[in-house]
Length: 401
Image 1 (cartoon, one colour):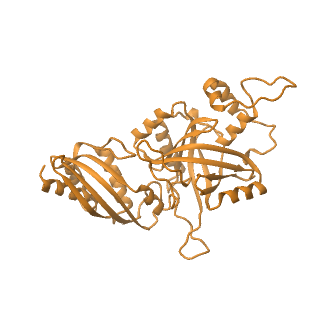
Image 2 (image 1 turned 60 degrees about the horizontal axis):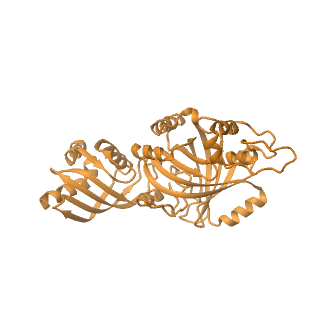
Image 3 (image 1 turned 45 degrees about the horizontal axis):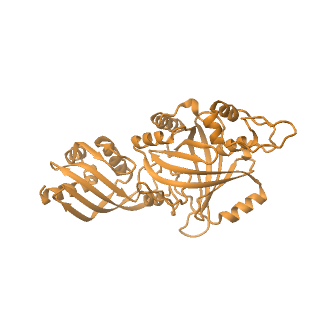
């Protein structure tokens, strides 16, 4: 294809945000995208034209004064491709990925590879620094996880328990600084999952954006008014999370605060001395974002695989959040009757307290608790019975778990 045509299409495509600010955006978009256009970018594999358009419009509405600059443009006439390195700046004036408008000036950048046929795009591969964008919006801590390359696991770094948080509250100490305490609410549900690979395919088909793979170690303390845990990410950083939610077998609200911790070892020792440690959970978590919902694919040590959905309230009502969560759950094949009521720490405690596969004969030594993953795989009906039963003999209140 002619160099001038490829260059013209690429530059017009990079100026679509300007068309959105005036009449004629739909017409210009349709001219620049073939009917069979596909977006092969991470987080939205094989997204069709309409889905890609919705994503662009959401971006433009969140940053209505967006200004995009083409920093480099390479044309390949033989393959009818253009490679574009770009940078952008805009003011966060609309909701984006669950974050309420902050009024902040946001800067981000990326690289696009587009294939053109008949003066319209037929394919797009795009990479942009979404983690840096989320950090600037206050959704993630500054030092966070980077999305992994294909076939590669990301370096575990701290990721806020809430990618839909409001902007940090101004600190009373220090000019121009913000404190690390964040308070928010979400609607959540958790499901046991016998086939995580199948759910992962559904997540990708839904168009959720992959945010990486995390290693998390949670230590719980015996607080009375709320659950309290220290979440460590294996690289010297951590978060202290306090939350309140009901242990019920359906989607429920959760109110919580988050505080970034610079010295997790000292914090863990201090809380253990003051309150006592009530349990610990280790897991690997794959994180995806879809609209205001975080999708967690969890492999929990000694428990098995789970899917956890958390829809962040970024200005919408509880009812709206419940509707979005139901939509995501249905798309992933999760059923309302399969919601797990108990947190991971309680499920682990139950497995350690009871041996459901055999009774220990009187007078004999206690046997080690069976591996919970094996219990679920071999005796799912007993596992369900176990997690439904309340342990009235435990001396420690359940809220401390």
